[in-house]
Structure formats: structure tokens, C-alpha cells
Length: 105
Image 1 (cartoon, helix red, strand yellow):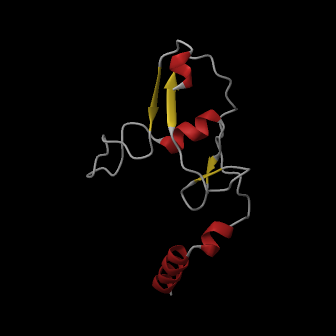
Image 2 (cartoon, helix red, strand yellow):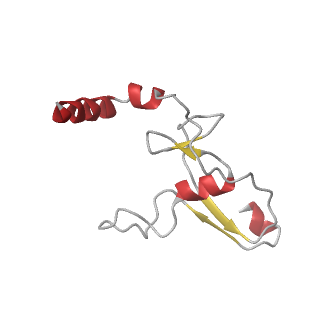
């Protein structure tokens, strides 16, 4: 890792960690929360991290380090506004919304 070559402590936490808890369906560190805190993006209506340049087409890896890296401003709120393109284009979501709408009738 480049940071270690420069004498910084660093560890990369890949998307699928061995610490995954199959009961809680989670791991010790949320890559989504790390992404929002670092200013990388926000959690969209599709429950994925949305970034301005790539939308939700990202694969997250979190790096923990003592290197003095510059970060973005944390993103506290969704920036989707009235956009629901991800929900409208997702076949599973459309099916779920239709099923939920039928239950309300």
C-alpha cells in the first residue's frame, strides 16, 4: 500500500470482510457511513452510496490511516431532491412499490 511505503500506518478494509455477521447482516465498520463522513457521497433512495461523478456505480473500500489526508465535508442529508431515477429503474423496487400500493388499497 502506498501509504505504508511512506511510513504511515494503514489498513484497507475491503467491501466483503471476514467479520461479516450473518445474523445482524453487518460488519464492524459501515463503508456507507465512512463514505458519507468523508464527503464521498450520500445514501440515496436505493439505500446505496450515491456519488456526483458515478451515481451508485461504485465499489467501496475503506482505508484507515494515520496519514494527514485531506477529506471532503461530511454529507448529512440526501442530495436526491425529487429525483427517484434509481427507484424507477430498479425492477425489484418497482415490484415492491406495486405490492405495497396494493396493500394500502
